[in-house]
Length: 449
Image (cartoon, rainbow, N blue to C red; front, side, top):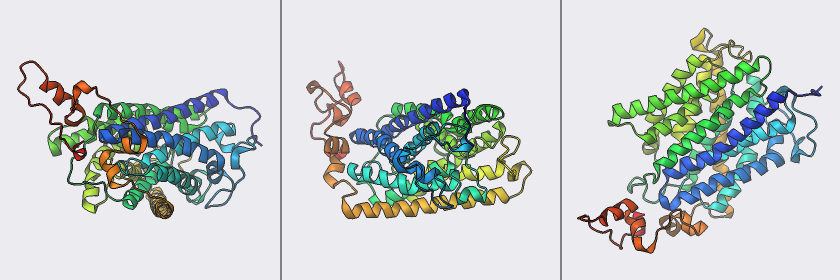
């Protein structure tokens, strides 16, 4: 029978965690927005904020029911369709149903938003909206059922504390599929495509790290009895893994390229957070340090995969989320211990157990990768049969912001003629008293913006 009373502390904590995870999507918008060129930044922000609307509505109407309805090993039933009856909770959560719905909705939202990093600068907005509805219902919700809703991966014994398979492997594989469907950006591999605002990236990384404490520690769900300690362990692991990965990434950069960059630090943080997500509630704080350190180094070394295999993953979703998610899921099989969580029945290989859990984790990770990649590829191709998936050449050159949304992120006065083309700093330097710098030519082409 469902409980007649709920622990008020647990309810409050999960609602607060829901707000923290919600903040991650605007944080991701800044993180991604800073890494694109100035003429595309509003389009990136628009896609991320629209994910809140699209995924949130799709999740409540049908996605949650597919994920957590009774159903069978492959898909849930429609018993929660539209949440018309929310009086009966899912007993194992220890929470009122709507509290759990809120928390899980934020996971679906950011998973959709993550995909946009692989497709930056070229996805037509209407096609993205259509994709979002179909992907949340047909891909995300199904994998969530497999892992968290009593599906076949859960029955297999695989462990995913907060979304290594459901969120990161899933979104990384989907991003790869859509990057292939859409094709490469105009000028990819030839023209410079550096991010236009690294402070935006750092701000976004900070907001992501902040929200990630709710992402991981909130996944303990109830905070009474033994789970009080579990939430604290997940919280601490989130801190340590992010920090270790930051050091790993910038250390690799220093040895390989001679400089540690702020962009590398931000990317390292996210890589470590991705890796610890599936393991946060199953490993000790000491184990979270090598998990994060390996994630930082491994993800940094995998940045070259897109050049080697010829796919244009604009903002390295594959290297950070797919590779980081794979490593984190396998790390559960190496470091998980029942001393942290009683759900661990077979300890990890490096903490006195055998290889059984590692094998199970590998099967679950591979299944999520294949299903997401193939399913997303099919969805992308189907949408392309009914509407244009990719923007035209003129829109891509002009910039998605102006062409699709009739806006620009940065406005300049007429007294700064050409400043937006040569850069505000260049124009300002040219106007300094005694400066010998040549003024910025007014004939700069669109391709140079």
